[in-house]
Image 1 (cartoon, rainbow, N blue to C red):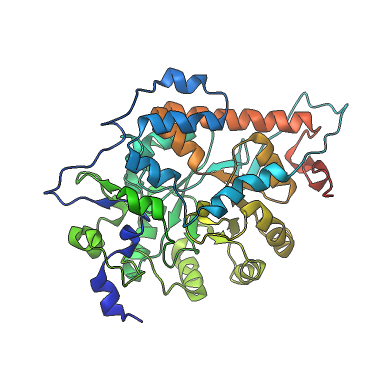
Image 2: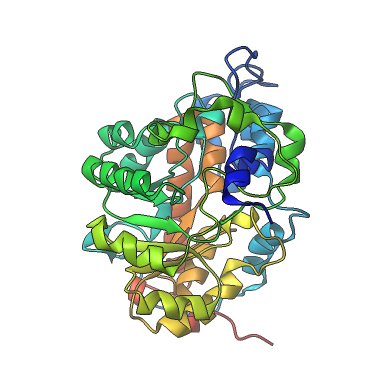
Length: 406
């Protein structure tokens, strides 16, 4: 087993495994970026003509470089879990009620004292400028237009201060705890000072999974695109370290393989905002999280990008909800593409849902307009699903909306 010193010297297996694109050395020519070599142009008008979230995938693929597409679209190993995430929603059938007055739908939810017009949030995704030049700024502007809370990644290509400067709705911050805990504390301070209203601590990534499609694509960012939230991290500026490939080590300089429950308490001791745990699938972990006093749980398998063959999140959700028993909010992500999926997640006990790849496809297709269109479609479809199943308010959505399993 490698020592800590050997791990640090070995450099970012995170990059080698494709967890996020490595910055190129200044001497290297930038590899193809989405705006440089598209196979065809996609206009904002075409994005506005999209009628479902599925429509954005081919639009984004046409606009993005091959490497960027593989980075976004790929998952872990044989990509079984990412497929299950989608298929599990398709297996759930709905049981409508008729002759219900649905002329005045109420889709509002409240999380941590903040009212949201829909139970739909934007999940954190890294390196959005690999998808579109405007990256996270386009996403946060679209989120504001649609009344949606955005969760910003630690591995954003735009600083938390700049993203919050462009925000018109609340923003949460996703945190990868760094091996340097002092730096992590300062990063949290920066995020909260910038205006982030909650911290989503990712707990399912001590190392990254076998992201083979990303490895084959050899995705890399140009020298002028980096990770400004890590700007003062000593290892973050070492390009040679980031570009190194060390097959003998699975560890990364930018992930804490030693993260434990003790760190959850440590983070809560100074965060000053609600702390959510992202990446919970096991009810026993949910129970421990409640004992640690976390504010909420996010049921997530990292979009199928880490450990392949774990269950679909919608299949894991009921066990988590049962264990939590209403004591804290439970959110879920993974596989959501339709308004009926949002309804099904809420019927199984989720307080709200998060989407990841769908809005990134919208971003890749048409920047801010594409993200806004994705959110608008999903919001409208959710309203349709509520009306067509006879549910007027969020609190009316429960398991009775699901057809009994046979």
